[in-house]
Length: 206
Ligand SMILES: O=P(O)(O)OP(=O)(O)OP(=O)(O)OC[C@H]1O[C@@H](n2cnc3c(O)ncnc32)[C@H](O)[C@@H]1O
Ligand SMILES: [Mg+2]
Image 1 (cartoon, rainbow, N blue to C red):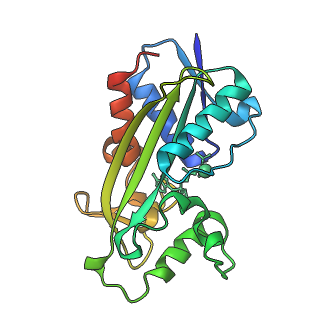
Image 2: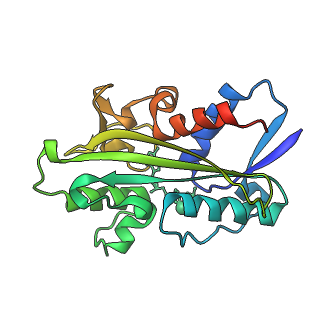
């Protein structure tokens, strides 16, 4: 059985990957192991782009485990905010000095709604970005990179209970609901991560 470390500590991403791997690779002898099960210390995300951060995360996990590694760096870009939160999506509220009592995803979502106060619906275009990086080993000089993006717009009020992160704020025109109102299967079929994962499955033989 080939083992691959999944270099993410985000429970929402891990749930989506678990469903996507069982759909795409159920006939292949591979085992995907989340990095926290292998006691990997998380990498510092010091890059200035999604791809740099994904490489840092994959290399860190591969170095500490001796296994091939897959990492996901992702985030949301809002046009009216010149692309913010972008690569800082996970740390948005903290970086903006958000004063509310919420924590984690809830604080980030509240901060984003606050930043967009007074901006009309048609000026709230946004997209999720996902970059996946696969490294065969920690010093792999040819990281394989797969990217996906997903267009939408930021709603005025959060809606939906599925998904994670910014999903309750991300309205998808084609589905006429937020990403948090989709099932995991529906989201994976069309999301930034689903698109990147489809490219990976077409190009990688583990
Ligand atoms: O780095 P890892 O350990 O993978 O976990 P993380 O949560 O820190 O992940 P990132 O650094 O890639 O930051 C991604 C941010 O973008 C958000 N995000 C990414 N994909 C998303 C999705 O499909 N739906 C909602 N929010 C998403 C997520 O909530 C984070 O705030
Ligand atoms: Mg992170």
